[in-house]
Image 1: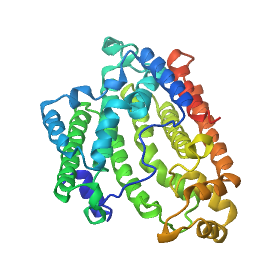
Image 2 (image 1 turned 135 degrees about the vertical axis):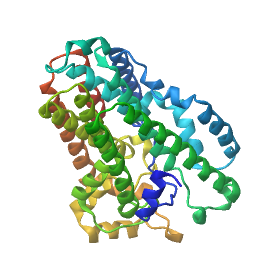
Image 3 (image 1 turned 180 degrees about the vertical axis):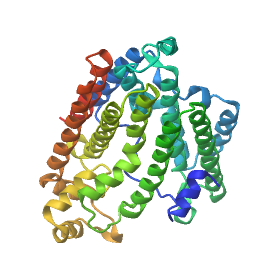
Image 4 (image 1 turned 30 degrees about the vertical axis):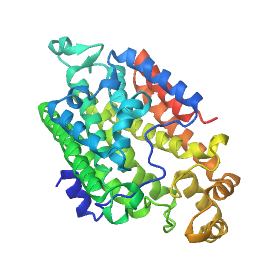
Length: 387
């Protein structure tokens, strides 16, 4: 049983169901996707590192190549591990390697600390220490491992059209095995950094991820079922654990590797935190702000919906759900979507997205002007550009 799986079982949330809102692409509109790709491409040139190949050494290893051959047996089924594998090939230029790229950019923006020894300068390439590049790869491996592990399906909820039971069970084994392999490589690389504080930071981020996924399954069920009114404050707390902690603590760890003081480390942490929250809010908003996606799938526990429920009250929200309910407890998503768009939830989520973007930009003022700092700013601008 995997380390992550053990943690999930401990919290009582081992099983996985299909999610309408679990996506790899940050942007839904082609214009925004083009803008995002340009921002990423420009940033990669600045750090001198093609982050779309961040995990290539691990992904091309003999062990994982053998796993990839086995995963081919899942073709023809609806096991989510196939979609995860496809995303690595077709969507890596959009956002799969975003975390590693931000770690590299903030490392270059901060540069070496005043207390760094001159003898360490030879270890820098394009203004980034080798240890910081290794940290960026480790961050990506951890994120990828969790994506793969979250592809475990609940066998009891499968339908005949999903594929043969034995194939789906095989897919679960592959998800556990390949996710474990990536996580083991990340942990080995983390130990090789030989920095106790960095190990503590990244290890705690792994714990946050497990806890955040537990909260998502407890408060944000994968299927569009209805939960108690959790409120936006709890939503933000839970989303930080599952979406923001890894990047925030990795940014802080990058500053620790360069021996920056606690103030700079705190600013790096805050940038990663607020940018991640803004990033998630952007993703949740896409089905509501792009007209051509009217009626598209969205989570009933996404930020605009939570804020909408906060604004109109629980009783009115349940009435709107009842009005959109069809036979067999199905929901007319298009009708419900229009009701949400007519309220204050979408505009409140846009304001919240931009607010966190502004906070991320404020933290960058502690770094001297540079191409790397500008790239970090451009990432925020791309995430908060919602029209």
